[in-house]
Length: 267
Ligand SMILES: C[S@@+](CC[C@H](N)C(=O)[O-])C[C@H]1O[C@@H](n2cnc3c(N)ncnc32)[C@H](O)[C@@H]1O
Image (cartoon, rainbow, N blue to C red; front, side, top):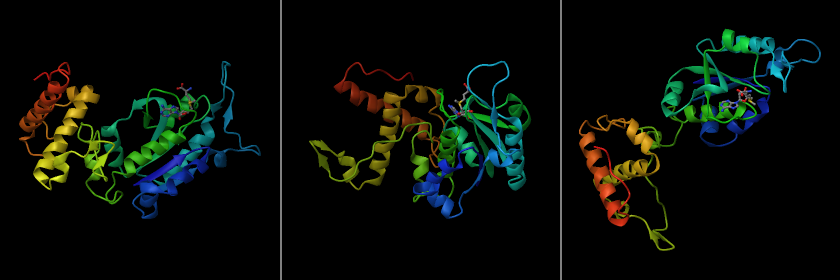
């Protein structure tokens, strides 16, 4: 998978190739990154990339021409890629969107700065507009890195364990189960017995129940969105709906015996 990023601050992306999952994927050729600075495409001795907005007002606007030229160069180098502008006005990304992004051969990501970019560039050169959340950052570089990290970690070979991405929160519509490591006891808090039992079936059921239960506790909106009739991870059987409902009922019942007002599931 290939990313071409149009940015006035290419240095910021160095962090991606230093350490971690993305750095490893880049060094192994699982993902490729090329950076394009619109300043290199700006004419004149000052290589101007921004100017004041028509109509007045604060801030500067990124100019059409250097951006269009940088995008054209990136398109020529990466003809299978679509162009996405990172913007607080874009479609808000979630895990499903990231899965779709990771399934494509490449993306040209445009990182904005200042007040934003000349609107005509959006009309002429942009295929998609993506937001990483309903808040405003000072530049599109961090959002571009967020998208790259989230997509690259899904690529085959990027993570140490092939399946680990599929067990993460949001991949199945649920949150992940809790995790524990050594020591077995910390300050009176013990690791759940089942995890020490060596019974892989029981451990898998417990993890599934915890994933359902903590989604119900922390993000009931996610549970409401999913139909428990659907298989919710790659290899789950169609009997899952029954099992999931029962596991969740048991979780809630166990909780209610400790805290009686902790709620009900609808069905
Ligand atoms: C200060 S912002 C411009 C905001 C713009 N005036 C607006 O209100 O829509 C500068 C750049 O940061 C990036 N940016 C800011 N917030 C973002 C978000 N939530 N998601 C993606 N990109 C964002 C965009 O590339 C944007 O062009």
